[in-house]
Image 1 (cartoon, rainbow over the protein chains, first blue to last red):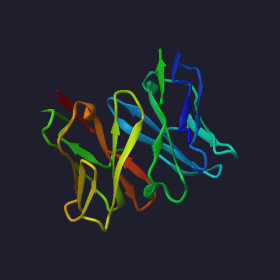
Image 2: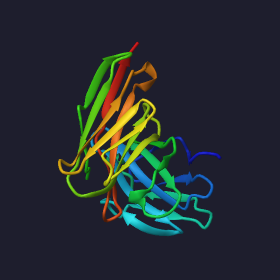
Image 3: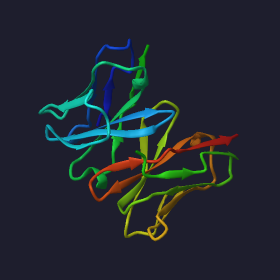
Image 4: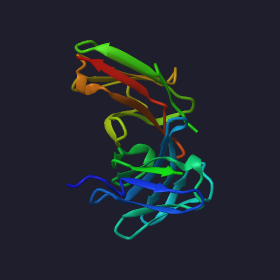
Length: 115
Length: 110
């Protein structure tokens, strides 16, 4: 089975722009979660989608949003980019059930740099 | 916000030695998982231990969980240069959240 695929791998944007990141989960996985990783804050949970519905949300401003399509693929959008949004964005998928009880399979991440 | 705290933040050992990393957390959990991350890459799941388990093994990995002390440890035996990576604990919470710690950076010198 193919693993979790994130595109693009690298992105450079300027402040004020918006960006969309994409994640294709492992075939058959219905849960997709997004994380932001920075040297200062570590790995922080953004949100989780399951069957096209946001099931869980971390403590991030409304500029961070996401969605999930019927084929379980997910996109994450960040509007009005700030310098502090520079980070590695990781997507993870898991089979089903509750996020807290399942093993997550991570993609390689999208490295976003905001200038 | 992070739930787990790994200790130490960084660990450097020689190949063949054992490496022990600790994780402490604050609230009750459903399970605790350990993940490995090679530099700038995604995380790879290592082992999951449920809240009613005390010890689990997988190859050269041994994980213990003490829910009374809200702590877990990961032991890597006979370490190899390829074990060089960051190791994170992740706690599955009762409210279905999952929280990662800050990680331990392990360097294994050949």
